[in-house]
Length: 551
Image: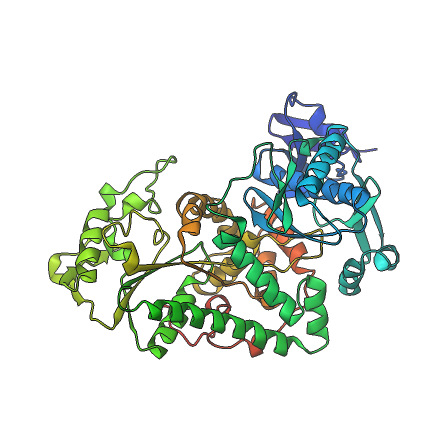
């Protein structure tokens, strides 16, 4: 057989065509490293991937971003295998990321969730430490539908629109699933995971430490309440899984789904506006924060409408105008200006003026020249005063940071956290990452309206996510209300745009790994034309055609 060249981080080698990635990596200086997958020509693959052409191979350790996803996917497979063996009559349905793990709803005859979590942890860690083999295979679509037809009807329904002739499968301890990405060769990489009870379900925790405890009871968690509310919304419209959504699309019922989902959003915004209006005698400031592509701008515009319905006049105060001069901006670890640090805002000036505005005084608020990187002269500042029937809307990544509003009484502010917390799942065993939903939104918006390619947006995304983890998510539980901007139908609409933009990623780009994963994900959805998406929808902020102006 022919020899093919392979480039590795430690040099170039030649291997026989048909050699696996794992064999190539193990021949290198990797002793002591927990390698679970690899990037081959910038595409994430399992260690059993066969090399057929000259390739670039980069190992993915369990602690890397790519490796972490592989480990968690492998852990979920083992978790369901163990649960199926111990509790065959109980249904575990995966939800979203919560308190350092994945939350699962539990239905069936379970008397003691604590005892169940302890039993699952013991069995899970025992099988993980034993290094149970993870088996891969491919079968025809018809064979896969027969396999899942009796025991896994949701998977069988998903396969009705499967776009490929073959279906990749994965098995462990007798439990079989559709393979939606690479897995580790064995379960040993997940041996530090454990299970904890939480509210009426369980959390598969990524590590040995107990999950972070929220303030108060589980039912008091702002994030968990938002998850639960959205799950109820999805159940109301009959869309809990991708298979449900696809059937509505093919059955021409998507217009009804869309109308109800948008109606749920409008009702929630009206409820938040009512809560603000009930406190109009004291409340003067509404703070809105959220991660990138969560739809904050459209939310604020729709909230403004509902506040006006209630007789309040919303006024905006932009944090952008309170940036310090460029030379005073703090530096990040990479040596560049850290514009996302809260210290990039003139907290003293902002706090002083916010306090005076709430007290009913007239102030001159600054204006910032982003091109020059400094504050404009006082002659360009704007005179402002908050009248009795007005509320001040502050939108920004630091809006929930207590340091920003420390100068005003707690009773005078209302804090809202906006995020896209999708509760749509592929099936009971495979979740959809909320960050992927937001990334698809941002790819579409940036490519259509900001001149950024999909590759550029993907490569920028890790630093965006790091900023969110540092500056936004630590304060989400401070919120008085959370608005979940996710819509059950949105991925079917975004697919029409995102698929094309992802195909534009050039060969050899480091963005290919994420781009390929997103393309495979979009393949699961029946596309929906955006004709019936209303002009006020959150989705319109990203695909265009909104009735609001974003200038």
